[in-house]
Length: 109
Image (cartoon, rainbow, N blue to C red):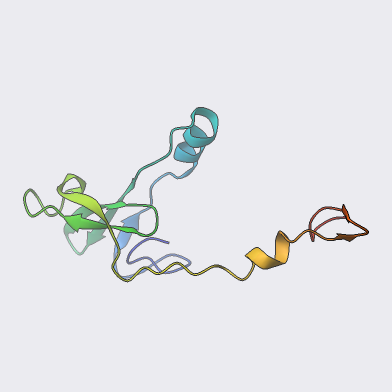
């Protein structure tokens, strides 16, 4: 999910969502982990760009430079981010079996 864009799209700003396939291919095939993506917004006649970082990092203005430019921001840890373990972790990766023999995971056929 991106800032100002609702779960299924739209939002208060017209946003240009970045290509996420190419960075994933680079990560898988070359081990190059994407450190940020850039999203561009248009609100009325104003345009601006923001970096998007992996959770729990958020962009913070450097204090200098064009506030509409992605280069004027750096990553900081979100003060409100608290990691909680997703309950689904316990549904799919629990070994099952019996008699001391691991038959796989809960999706075992």
